[in-house]
Structures are given as C-alpha cells and as structure tokens.
Length: 104
Image (cartoon, one colour):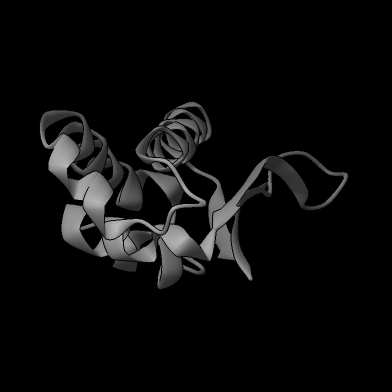
C-alpha cells in the first residue's frame, strides 16, 4: 500500500483540477512519524496546502540533519526516497499554496 498525496485547485471555471500528485511507499511511515510529518501527510484532507507546508519543510530539514533515521525504514525503502517525496510535496505546496490537499 502506498500514500498518494494530491493538491486540487479550484481556480478557473473548468472545475477542480489536480495540480500536483505524487506517491510514496507506506514503508516510509516510521520515518515520517519520527520527522513529525505523519499528520500533515495522512490527516490533512481538505486543508489548504499552505497549512501543511511549514510542517513538511521542518520534516525535510529533520531528515537531512539526522541520517540515523534511515534505520527506521525497511530495506526496500531508502532515506533518499522519503526525502525526495517530502521535497516534492513541499514544492507542490509552495507553488500551489491555495490548493486543497487530498490523500489516498
């Protein structure tokens, strides 16, 4: 099972549109909990992207500063995979700050 993180924009008259979408392995969960981003990723449905971006930024910094957190990951997932996903989510949240978060 994986996490799919989407940002949906309500801008324009054409209705809602997915402006960002990325997915990551559920194996990253222990690292995301340790980095303090679990709630921002899994429990943020309906929030604006700007509301979760600060927490995600903090988590990215935490993962870069403490490579020992890689021990929490299963062998099939690398710390760089977890960081890449969070950096992509942060970029999406920054660019599309007024979009709504949807997770699956």
